[in-house]
Image (cartoon, rainbow, N blue to C red; front, side, top):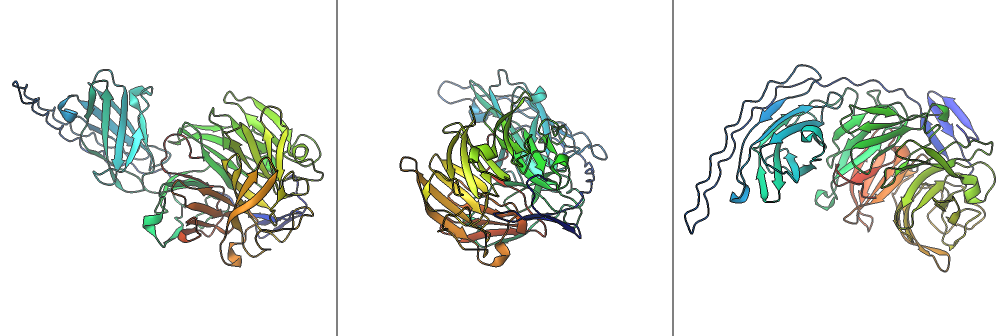
Length: 519
């Protein structure tokens, strides 16, 4: 690994110690997963009868919905489940149609449902599929009308559960609904282990789905990218290699970007995988020696950092365009205006001014650069900082951009001090934490306006670490190297904690698994 000043390998442990904050990781190979067994498809239900015309002058009588057809038997093995439905309803007494659908499970991920359907409704302008564990549903999958047979994925379902779903189609005159139908999900892949979840206040949680990866093998021998629901259940997974650190959905919500960070970056992998797991693009050669994680821009450009092409041992900040073209924006050493080795460990996109913000682990600094020419806008913390005011001890990993002048930072809080500045935040080696910092862009000053530190030395991690403020004001914090994720209130009250015996990678929390990301 470039930028490494010390490497120790013993009993499968690789420890890297840096000038401004330790970084460590354990090595382990990932076992392959077993395809899910298919189940018998659900029988179709009878369509709802149409309603009677409005009173006044004599309304025309509603027509009777077509009878539902019997669901086809599911196929044996990895093919998942298959079923069909037919039914009609005059939603709101305005429209009548027939919706005929079939559903199966992905042969790669047995909790992903694949629904295709057709309808007699003319001029369909929008459609959706409501689904959930009961007929109250609770989750909604938008339908992309450009897909053949309106192919739609049901995402976020628990393993080995019966789910209900219902299709609604609409045109300019109104909408109609198909009948309720069911699909049975398959089991978890072999080796997947649910985190231990302790919840103090379920009602105060933000809910939604947590996307992350597993850096170190669990007891089952796997290191997948995966998604957890609000209960901590694994609802999606995919393996590309060991040492998974970066897992993030694209802006369209149709693909997952997955990358790892092996001890030798020459072996680094980065894949773009469809959410049904059926198409896997290996882009490792395009994004050679990609490190830690990446961020996806609204036009599906990907900003990342990789080992430099020179000898200074500092990462290059790069972008990959949707057509596969890769360009180098600037070397991190140049952007920081410093000397010696660098170790970039996070990059985020600032949509308000079309810039990139990255973190350097060795120099304990955060820098903003222009995408257009790589010029430096400002530097926080470290020996070359361009802002005065509050600083922080040690290094940082995860960053969330809240605005042009407002940031959350995961502070690893090692014993090292950035540059020669006197630290005024946090402690020294007694636990990692979170900071919110506010910038005065005119006066070039920085002020800490909020901080949180989990109590106890067990929360001290120099490996990874990430955080995100959620829509309801809660903050989710991943103490990556300790395998601990907390959701806390703005006042620091712990609402829920998830623990594994392994390490979490970077995180992305989403209220839904459809559409653009929340950050």
